[in-house]
Image 1 (tube, rainbow, N blue to C red):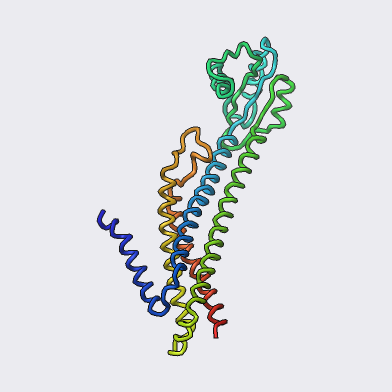
Image 2 (cartoon, helix red, strand yellow):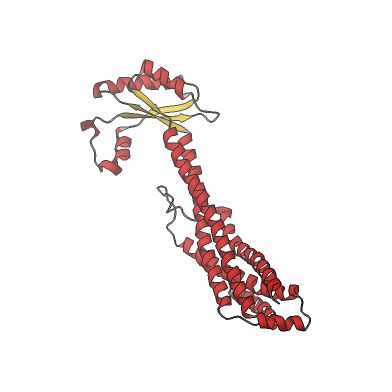
Length: 306
């Protein structure tokens, strides 16, 4: 436990020690260091949630695809006196249909449970013209032929209507896939914004230290040496800020409601399994973006200084 508690202190000492080496070359330039730290922390916090949204959307799409792909439903819509005969005829058709592993008619209690969220508890289905439902489970080696099954049902059980869940499955999985794509797009935009803000801060720091840079050049310091000092400072600051933001983001994710059996996209927002390692890549990416942005800015600005 003491080792874990001392880890942030050791990281801070390393960062401040490296910054002290940079400060011997280029003195601090005021608010730019704090701006880099704050911007990196805020963007990392948002990046954790964007990553969690993207991964949760992927899991949701896979779950919907798995739940809806392996089954189908038949609705028997006939007058009450004919429903039992139509259900029995539909079940006989399903017993001889290739690709159907099992089929069963839902009980009255199961019908009531399905309609309870909309019509309330204690519903008496005998007073309503509700259709009978038959649940179909497909075989593992492949699905049945929906077109052929519809033709057989039309001939032997005219009141039976097949629903193979395609009209439900495709829009849901497409929507979840788009949410996943939006999460990754948000990650890219966050990293780009971080790079832009660090570039702005680096430009301000270089401009504020123009006289110091001129003196360093007079004593023989090369532009590459000066640039490395700026790059080191902003890279370390961005990495440290992103690490702090990631810690707060992961802590916030842990306090979100856990996913249950009826969970949706919001209650399922988070990480699962090895995905918990992915948020810790955010500080690495932020430091890399800061390194690239600061190096490009330093070279461009130093080349323009006389």
